[in-house]
Image 1: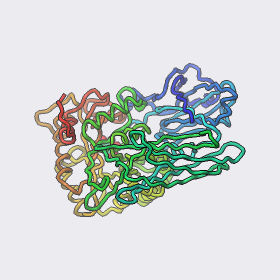
Image 2: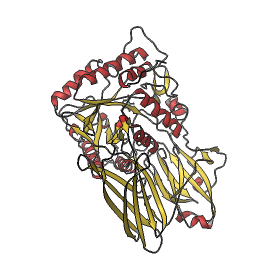
Image 3: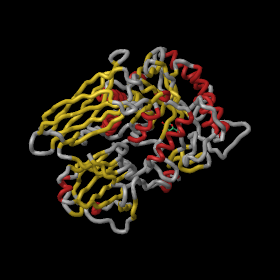
Image 4: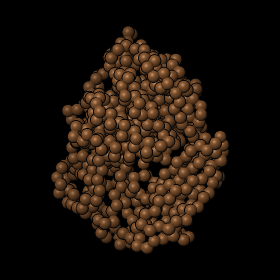
Length: 574
Ligand code: GCB
């Protein structure tokens, strides 16, 4: 497979005129991707925040020879819904604004000039999640767009997985793991072909650890599944040793390699136990976590790999060992960075605050969950699939219950090994059924900010523990809005001062540390983020609960507090 980056030279216009499916944009602007039309207004207050439809267009010149290949358009994500037209014909669409999607191009392409036109819409739809949340719903083609050029026999690119290959792992005994490799080979030619799949596992130094081959006859579409034993692998041990192997899976017909994938894999076990909480490789681990949204000051969510690397260096330098990648599927590269830095990841879908008013089955949440799991499956850093966040804010009834249970069951079916998780609001009763719907339940607890006093946090956690002594508790969110320009000699709630943020977080750190039954917590949030609906702490359009400002220029005092507690490395406060 060859990938060609198509990020450059797009025409863009803010318009809902359907004629742009087939006609060239007049009077638009030239943009390059990643792009969002809310880079500035999405961080500046609700009155200017544009939610609606825009068009992107690009021409592709194709020779007859190029058209002999199998061509797919890969769109990293389109916020929030998109329709892709090729030469005026609808070729594909997406209603999952945070997931990658692909479109088969061959049926629509001709030799010569082709027009790709993509209508992207971040308006409000009652059946597309998120329906309600404080973060800005940026619109645009905000991740990479690629052209995939393939032979007519190749690993599947359309079934939903990213690589067409799923790697799974299971510990067999003290010394070894079972490595499962399954996937689908697609034959788009007219004749069946005899193929061979070769698997090679290399260690971090490039030494071959394992080799395996499988012959298979491919008619139209053939599934394969291989199980191998990996003896004594060096374990992926979180931040202490994020050791990764590389699996190279190739498909040949005769002596020619038709397709190949290179996938990083770390071997580890993760368990949730009633008495010791979370275990990574059979050792108890307290989650020192932060949450992250995917935006950045001045660029919205149209971030690049350099932005992602910068975010990761802030997080690892502070000494965190876990990240809640809220509240939706993030760029695949960020999960890769988590694998490489040893961060345990809570991955989740945007099933937030309110269920759909006209789809009682909330099918879009299910579709987003399936995409998340299939596309992010190979990342060893992910320990759980979060199926909802505060969905009971509006109502707690049998429909929401059924939706959560169905999502959790689907997650288990797609991935029987990883945990299911949910983040609930503080007020869910101790005897509510909802606690039992997932393996892990977190609570978003804002005592000392939205309600109550800081000290109530410990009391509430103890109360949960008394009610369910065998269930590990996790604080899935906590934090306070802070403007680093604001200071106080007598810090108090809602004064937005750095001093209040400091004492608040100090209290949470101690409260979690002192309680063994608390599996860990996630600071809300690592970075300030675009929240068009907000207007507080002297700033419009931002959630200011970050430990670092949205432009990443200033670390607030609480950042250094965490670093002092969490990191073993000596540091200078500046
Ligand atoms: C929450 C939500 C999160 C908000 C946060 C806040 O509970 O899960 O999306 O940003 O509170 O800052 O209010």
